[in-house]
Length: 268
Length: 245
Image 1 (cartoon, one colour):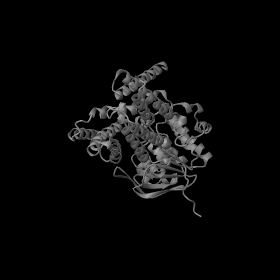
Image 2 (cartoon, chains in turn red, brown):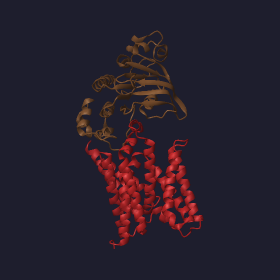
Image 3 (cartoon, one colour):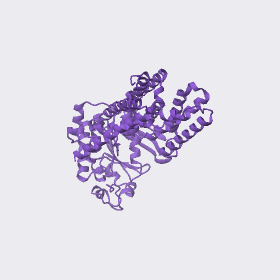
Image 4 (cartoon, helix red, strand yellow):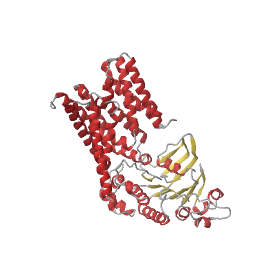
C-alpha cells in the first residue's frame, strides 16, 4: 500500500521543501521571524481567494504573489510607527480574514478551504513538484550564496555594516526567501502549520549543534526525517499528511529537548 | 604633500528616529594617531563612532574613508541570541574565513588560550568576550582600531590590563586607534588627541590642552580643579559619567 505513486510524489515534494526549510528555518529562529512566517502564510490564503476569482489555473501564482507582497509590505512598513509584532499581527489576521471572506463569498463554495489551511500534499502533480523543487532550490542557492553575509548581519547589524554588508538588504532577501518557501510549502502542510515546518526542525537541531552550519545541515536532515515519517504515518493510518508531518517534527523536538536537559543535569 | 586622512567627516549630521544626535561634525583621523572620544551619556559618542565606521548613514554631510581602508571595529555591546550556536572560532571567521593558525595566534595575542576557540561565544565572561572582539578586529589587519567603550563591564584591574593590551597591539600593527572611553585617567595619559562630544564637537586637542578648556571643564571638571585632578580622577567622581559600571 505504501509503495504507491501518490506516496512517492508526496514524499518527493515534501523532501524538496524540507531541504530548504531546515537552513531557512534556522534564520527564522535566530532572527525571531516566526510571526513573519505566519503573516506570509495568511497572506497566501488571500492570494488563493483572489486568484480563484480571476483564474483557477493561477492559484500558485496568486499564492506566491501575495506572500511576496506581504514580505515587501512588512519590510517597508517596519519601523514606521508600529512595533513589528503589532504590524505583523494586523497584516496577518487581516489577510486571513479577507481571504476566508473572499473564498466563501466569492462564489467558490465548492472550494476546499481545509485543503489550503491544512495542506494537500497527497494530490501533488508533476507541475507542483517542479514548482516546489524550483522554489526550494532557489531559496537554498540564495542561502548558500549569501550565507556569510546573512550570518554576519544576524550576529550584529553594526558589525556587518562595518564590513561593508548592508543588513537591510540581507533582511529583505531573507524575508523574500521565507515568502517563496511558504508559498511552496503551503501545498504540503497548509497555511496554519507552515511556520512549524520552518521552526521545529531548527529548534530541534539547536541543542545538538555547535556552529550555525551544523545546525542548518542538521535541521535539513531532521526536516527530511520528519516529512518521511509523517507521510508514512499518514498513509498507514489514513491521517491528514500536514499535521502528521508537523507532529513527527514535534516528537523529534521533544526528544532533542529531553537529551539537552539530561546533558545539562549530567554536566552538573 | 598633505597626508591622506584614513577617515574624514565633513559637516556630519546624524539623525536617529527624527532626533538630531550629532550635528556639524568635522573630523579627520591620521595614520598611527590615538584619538579618544569623551562626552556625557547620550552625547552622541557611540553615534559618532558608528557613523565613522559606516554603521550609520549621515543625514547631512559626508564621511570619506581612504580607499581600501580596513577598520577593526569593536562594538560597544554585542548580544548573541542563545538560539544561534556560535563558537569563538566561527565568530572570528565572520564574515571572512580565517585559517585556524591565525585564529589561535590572534587569541593568544589578546591573552586568551587557543583552546577557547571551541567554546560558545555565549558562555564567555565579559572580559573574555571583549578580548575575543579585539582578536576579531586584529584578524583583519586593520589601519584603524575602532573601539566603542571597550572596557565596559570590566573591573579596575581588567580595565588597566585591557588598555595595556590595546597599546601593545597598536605598537605591533602601527595602526591608528579611535576609541570611545569613560576612563578619563587613561584618556589623559594615553591619547594624542581628545575629542569632547556633546551633540557636536565642543572641544578637541591634546590631553593637556583640552583638560584646561572651559567646555571640557563644564562637562567633566569641578570649577577650579585642573588637569591634575582629572588625571587622578576616580570612578566615584560626581560628574564622572563612567561610574555606572
